[in-house]
Image (cartoon, rainbow, N blue to C red; front, side, top):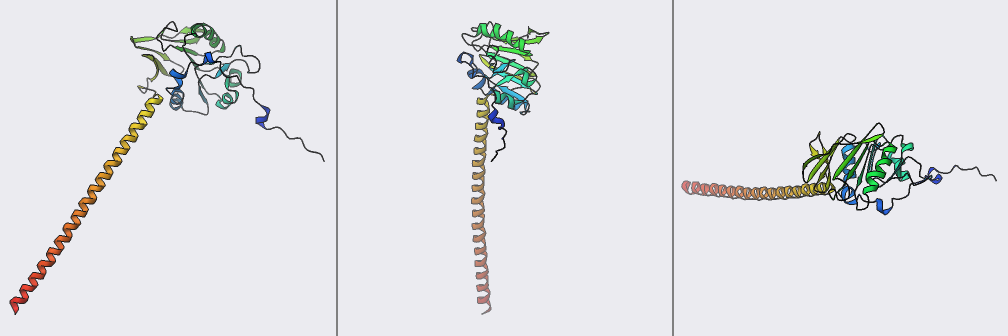
Length: 265
């Protein structure tokens, strides 16, 4: 008996993936992931079918099977008009596969990352064609040469983005790629939406808002229950008064009838 050959399923063919980032690349937790900025940014931009917002995932010009030499692991990567499914399947952003470089990358400083982020990655992201490359130093310029820095690609070279200083604890610059202001505020990264004149909320703020709304809802339910109890008590009191009035009126009629009976006898 002859068995027809069966084409392997798509999953069984295998998709070559980028390796996980080395430990020295993982600096995003306190400034990016713990505040919950990836979901906050995803909610802000929408279009989840064509937008990638990810942290500490590979980005490279080369496919993952060739070499890891040109692979970088940005602490925050944002790309519009791309294929999130391909990024997830490869565990990384393969520029040739996506058809364009990421629109925005950001690195967070650590004690050992200054030269790597300010020189090596700056050159690497420029070679990839990334329109904007940002650097954030929660230490306030101890690890990097400044609190906050951004570069915009012009003619294949990065040109510094102007950074404004409000006071000692506040610095900010405008990201054209995102339509947002990146802010260094007393060691914390914030995203300001100029058109809406508001900050994108952190996870803690979303949680606090949800807890406050739950507390308000509970207080409203308690108030409604109290009002219902008062209304029920008032209705019960009114019913008793109606009953007492009806009984009194019945008694009066009974007495009047008795008086008429005695008067006629």
